[in-house]
Image 1 (tube, protein in one colour):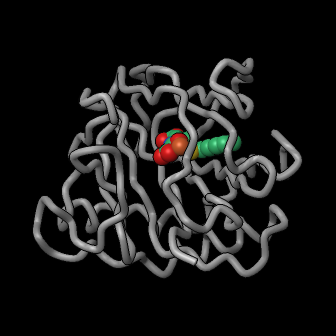
Image 2 (cartoon, rainbow, N blue to C red):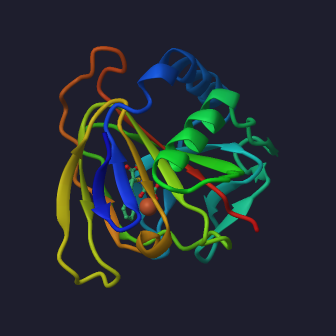
Image 3 (cartoon, rainbow, N blue to C red):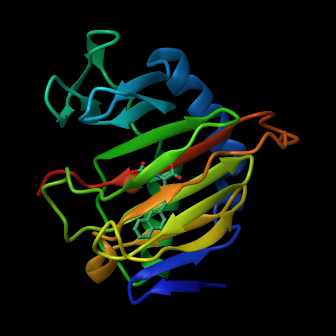
Length: 204
Ligand code: MD3
Ligand code: FE
């Protein structure tokens, strides 16, 4: 099943299920090595979402704006590598959405505790904007907002559940999007948190 949100944006409900038994412990190990932390916005405000990374480079907030770094500033070490099961899941999902040959080099891992939210934004810090982004939702459900190419464009809402995958790229790659404050409805496996993985290709 594949739900179109745009010409090149699709929700694949439950697509991650076959990978979860491998994926969940792998994410646990990543956060042991590179712990979740809160980044700051361009305006200097701390985000309510906590983040970490696996892969060759990680997205960090720097003094002015954002950049991708090969070293985790919290540990001084390289980020944990991307688990094979996550790479495989992302490639299969990209394929199912019409993007063959997806070669990701990073995965941003977002953790939402109850009340955490993500304001409307565009993902434009990757230099390869031709590659899609594959998102995997885990734990508590959240209401996802997707808009147009201007912040002021109207937004549609959709609920993302444990195991859902979203792929977006091409003409839909630069749409504004966000997540409403997450409600505390504990998940049987993950408890009071939502984890979102976004698998990306940053470098050409
Ligand atoms: C964009 N994460 O990390 S990804 C981010 O749930 C981020 O944590 C969100 O935005 C999260 O930068 C959402 C899912 C997504 C789904 C559909 C989209 C992003 C989209 C459609 C168009 C543009
Ligand atoms: Fe985003």
